[in-house]
Image 1 (tube, rainbow, N blue to C red):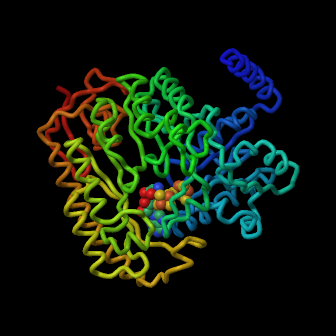
Image 2: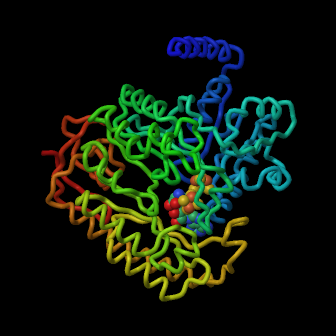
Amino acid sequence: MENKTIDESRQGEVLDLAIEVNKGGKKLFLESYGCAMNFSDSEIVASILKDQGYTTTTDMNEADVIFVNTCAIRDNAEQRVRQRLNDYRKAKRAKPEMVIGVLGCMAERLKAKFLEEEKLVDIVVGPDAYRDLPNLLDSAQDGRKAVNVILSKEETYADISPVRLQSNGITAFISITRGCDNMCAFCVVPFTRGRERSREPQTIVKEATELFEQGYREVTLLGQNVDSYLWTGGGLKKENPTADELKDATTFAQLLEKVALVNPDLRVRFSTSHPKDMTDDVLHTMAQYENICNYVHLPVQSGSSRLLEMMNRGYTREWYIDRISAIKRIIPDCGISTDTISGFCSETDEDHAETLSLMELVKYDFSYMFAYSERPKTLAERKFKDDVPEEVKKRRLQEIVDMQQKHSAIRTKDGVGKVHRVLIEGISKKSKEQYFGRNSQNTTVVFPKGNFKPGDYANVLATSCTTATLIGEAV
Ligand code: SAH
Ligand code: SF4
Ligand code: F3S
């Protein structure tokens, strides 16, 4: 089995060269919107096109193919993409043979309708159909519009080595699950990314190992709900695994350990944790391994149990607070961040006050804060009225943002006077004489370069700070 794999990959290399000679010189301009998952997918897309002889370019005007990997999470995410299409329109006018493809979640949501709405688009392809891109491109280059938005129950692109885009050579993403089975009432993701499936653990460990060998020093394991990761051998997560299947299964805590064991100098992060599924097991594994970062992103969405129920999040305010207590108990110096939604259907001032009081209780290091945006087909769109006026959504959001800013400042200040182990990622934007990196809790730290180089770990004594950045010197 092992030999066969090696032979096949060698054959692949030779084929690569042959294709490059035949098709060489074609250029792909690839732009990504949305979450880390989408950026990670773009690296798969770049890999599939590299095998077709394409190199990537950052100049859209010299591209033969423009791909935009899109997000559909909120209406404004889609509006941004539509505006960007106008820039592609100009580029295509100057070079009519240029192929324009829309990829990702918005493509999946709109399907062939996209071609009707936007005449300039040649290809529409959903997140599970990227292996079909060479065929779709052939069609488009022959002048036939092409669509593939079939969602899969198995596809994890496990065997594809991503081409690292815009990489600093130090940090990288690794997808561990695809899709989502949760059906939160506000969320479009289950419709755009399909059923949840877990990727085979060996392929994840292999990718992490290869990254380490290439000089990378941090990997972030990605999934919409990493805690529901479960490999039972078949790929698709079993609804009700039998005791026998579970015996051989790999849980998220076990996967985390396997990746942590790749090398003590490889930092491991993950995102996103789900409050209903995050177990103490995961927290104990984090506490056990120095190289698993002390940082949890635990989206709360709302502090009101009534709203959480309507959102179909699967937990109450009390349950969430219990998970926060578990984090603080098991990993006392853990960084914690969250996502919030303001103005979800029927939200009252009292519900909103509960979100604020929960924030006061947790004192998050950081938050992604949003105003509710109704999405077609979702449970909320079908069952509830989007009845909170826009200006009320905005006002509540602003109150949340203000509170978070206050808390971020306090949390950052807590780090002053302490020594932080920082993984150096590159030169600071503000000064060529300074490096920047992050501590375990995900706070950015800047300090004078000294004799360090990117990829090194430095122990930095923080001497001052801004709201979100620690400033210090290596000790
Ligand atoms: N899987 C992650 C979230 C992915 S989407 C989780 O379960 O936490 C990222 C964030 O976008 C969500 O946490 C939520 O805060 C926000 N979001 C999703 N749908 C939204 C909508 N319709 N309106 C506003 N914000 C939304
Ligand atoms: Fe959306 Fe909920 Fe799935 Fe997150 S867990 S992607 S919010 S449905
Ligand atoms: Fe957006 Fe799709 Fe990610 S909708 S947030 S790109 S999963």
